[in-house]
Length: 177
Image (cartoon, rainbow, N blue to C red; front, top):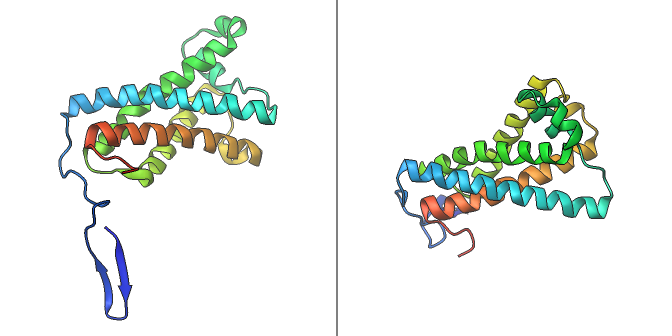
């Protein structure tokens, strides 16, 4: 709800942009299924944004995600032969796992870009748990700053794509109406 600050105090009133359905449009099971699909779409958006960024920056690909997946799945020999495949397995697998979390946020009314920002943090935390658990990464605040920015931007793309899709299909909210 928009807030208006006056000398007499702060007032809030409902406008058409702050009105959204009080109840989700779908069941919880359907929301989880929507989250799975949105997670895949978000991972695709993240991979696409990564490819576009690398065209401009000429930054080499990071194989930490692929090494992580290979380590946890005991596929180290496969990583040596197919590192890009293992990277995609990690990105799409983690996207698939994180998507339902955002769908449940939408289901319970935690919506919009701020909710997507919070979900991006959860997605980054998920990556850190599995990467550090596999022993192939360092804590993100020890990374070079440019790598921190790149990771935040691409995970942010993921969060916005997943958030928009979940809010749209679970709650019926269009961010751009």
